Length: 349
View 1 (tube, rainbow, N blue to C red):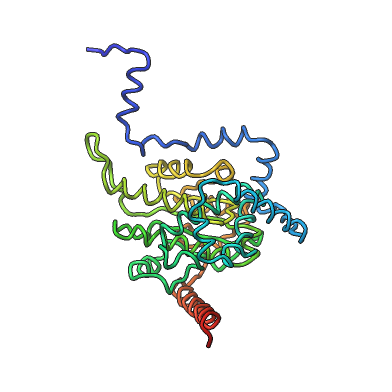
View 2 (cartoon, helix red, strand yellow):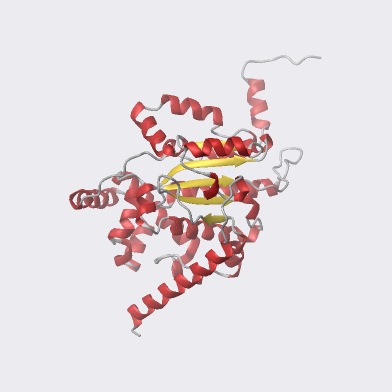
């Protein structure tokens, strides 16, 4: 017997039965429509940044003074900034330093209002993730707990030692090396924050920006269970992914100029469309997607964006030789040296 159709009712019931991850808020096809509707100057800037031909902003002393003043005024206008004010009280020289404030201004292309909002959100999250003991200073591997060290050694996030043709830094995230244990969510968040800061330590990286590469895990993704319940493994997987991805793109002061995402099959397409809802329109216009089953085609496309095969990780078809273990050892030495210097500064030799 055929069901009678009442306008709107059936569609709404069918929609309500779908799990949230089956209907991402912003699909890939929406992206094309959004880019087409962007003002021409914004679309042109997105293209220039994607291809690495955007001219650097000239940072004259007068220009910087003006932007610092604007930033201070925009922060003053914000009402909810308790975490920022706490950081200002705990370590004023750190929070008000020109170097720290420049991170946010450069990230937001010197839009003072956007930089102020990002800075306030930054302190909210940093205190939440690192706690009162470690939030009000540079993030150090020496502060990592045992679970943090394990997440670090797995290598889910990496700052590559290479630059692209436009002298931009490269940050790589591979879910294959992700620590999926429920108790280690905070460890993955701390690792993401540490690596993001490591990517923007140099002035050239702050000015020219960071190219973000993302590759999924090749493990079997949990499937939805029957009925109305969402599989807890899949729910945790997406919630953790969303938090860290949101931190990197909307909270941390990292100027991402291009996002290149790779997927192993069409079944995982919804994961990447799911990520799009956490990007603002500026970053969505700089997002590109690739199929890992066509490595030669991918390398040809990436070369147009200034990314040659020899500077890309093997996980996405590149040929870069990189010892992640040696990188960790060097970072540990650097962090220990900085810790000793700061200790002498505060307490004397």
